[in-house]
Length: 395
Image: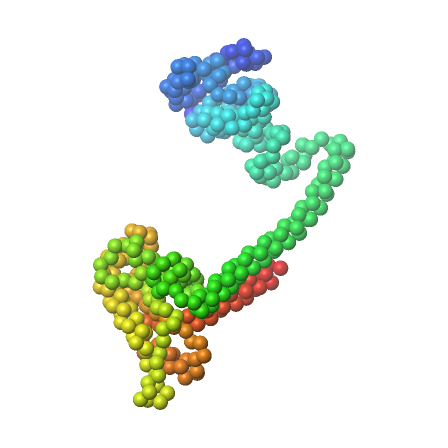
């Protein structure tokens, strides 16, 4: 900025400025307009207060610190960057006002000088040394960047050098000890987290085993199978996100109560039936042959209806899911899982029969509660392996 555009202001207040007497500073036109426009609680403009050194906290101390460093330096309050140019130092008015206000305490003079030193040091670390008592993160970074200069400024007396060396040695020793302790604490916390997660997984599987010995409604009530499966959908693996509830979206036609968005952005559905229902039944007219039970057949019919409806109204359902859940999903060729029955005391022929019958379906898988338990156990085993592998690498 051209110096001719700067506005000279004489600040005078014997009571607040003390030995500094009259102070000459400069304002940029925008700051002058701002000070003329803004008014204090007493109705005076900020410019009027500025001429008395009262428009901001720490004004006197800022000037005092700059004068100590360079008595001939012109001080310019600006709305631009805080910077130094030849014999001028530009101070961003709002930045310094905020910095001084944030750091002002009842001990007016001491903290005022501290605020000024702190502000100037942040912008001109080579010219202004900050000797404040509090050490912030920014102070640490400043020391790190200017370490050699700081060491050069340490008094050259042998006593101080010895103290510096002793302190540095002590700090290095303490840091080494703290690093070892921190590493051990991190490992302990990681072990605790791992054990906590495994405990949670195992407790849910044990709960599922106990539930299978009792009777619960399929869909009605807070203890229903539908609610329990919804709350423990992790048993189906990491491929699924949080389920979508039918009651929260407005869709035409039939839909299952819960749908499962996949990690890769598609949609699968889950039909939950009771664990007491038969999955397959032997075909007595053909030795060794099995067919779907009546309950499974009905479930397959329901699911086919759901899948047809989803494809028919896929654009509307996609928009509703986006509106309510914020998910942008593809509703192309949705897949379905039917959870029904269990495989307790099954023969190898029954296992093979279910495999073959599942293979005959397209986009539908019939899963038993026994399979769900096994999937949960597999998740725990994989979690253990992953944790052990990570621990070996980190050590």
